[in-house]
Amino acid sequence: MDDTLKRLLEAEMRAEGLAQQAEEEAERLVQAAVAEAKAQEERFRARIPDLHKGYIQKSEERAEQTIAELKRRYDERHIQLRNMAEEREEDALVAAFDLLLAAD
Image (spheres, rainbow, N blue to C red):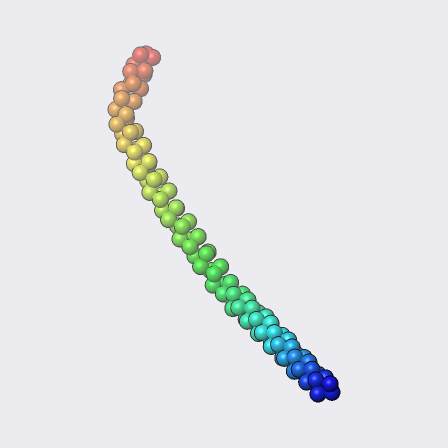
């Protein structure tokens, strides 16, 4: 009986040792995961200014494109209005002279 109790006690001690090792390994893995997460967060935080700069640059490019497009449309409309005014200038002068002559 003594021999059986000794074996059971040894088996229990080995099991406790294995459980302790498993807990230590789990803790080590958790600590490594936490350290890796912190390192990744720091890398991300370090990239934030570059990301911000990239978004601002793209926004500025889009704004410049929009301004260029609006200016192009404005210039086209200006030419169109100028052409329309020139086309109607003679009619307007004739009408004005007719009004002036009719007023006398």
